[in-house]
Image 1: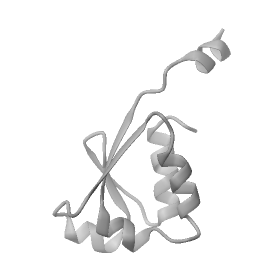
Image 2 (image 1 turned 120 degrees about the vertical axis):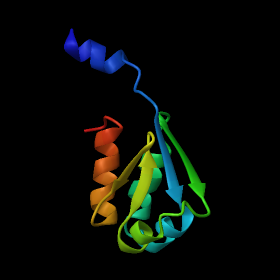
Image 3 (image 1 turned 30 degrees about the horizontal axis):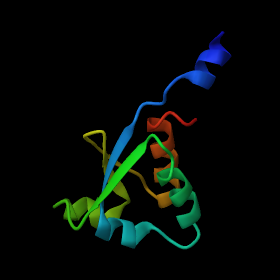
Image 4 (image 1 turned 45 degrees about the vertical axis):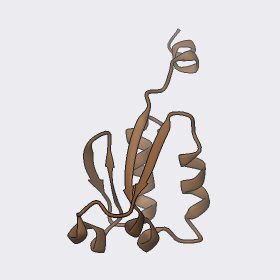
Length: 90
């Protein structure tokens, strides 16, 4: 029964707001395909902003506002793993 519920349950939507400059700084050719796959899922709603006025965080690590909460990581790969966890994909 648990397996059937997991198969047919609706995934909650995850809203992610990015700083365009932060994405440019931390997204690379190597990790772009993985991010692109993640962003193209039905339950992921994302928006890029020119600036989110979080310059200190923006310079040091990848970050986003996820469902209204600030989230960051040491690297772009680690950040994607955190995003997947929040979106319920792991």
